[in-house]
Length: 187
Image (tube, rainbow, N blue to C red; front, side, top):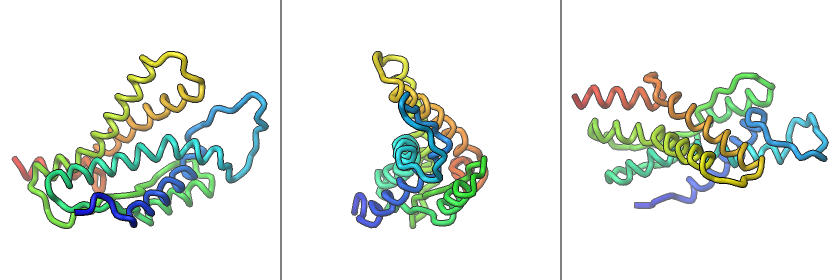
């Protein structure tokens, strides 16, 4: 069984760049004192900053699903969802104050037993909870961080907590719906 395919790696690169662009206006980058503020539509520094923070939260969330499924012997493939990612890019391009996107998913071609299905569905938000905990720990214990590092960890902490709770809302297609329906089926 292939751990990760070349096509999945290509999709991860596309997703990372797109997430950097989408989140570039929502995740404020600390500016240097001498940096001249610009109102450019496309700022590579902002995109890199946002990708550094948002991409791990989204990608590791999806890999949580993938790796738990693989651990149970189920084939699992990572995919970007063109419509969901495209919607996020369009909303960013038109300057929408709202951000809505469902950029990726993991497909598992065979049905899993209900408790396994619930664990697979919970794995993504569970990863976000772990990332929130890591960010919280680093912010509390690491001394001498630069302002940029502290801001990055603080944004990561908030973003991962939001993704944890948001994805557990029991409405399709969110993970909470799958967790709940699998638990109901199991019991």
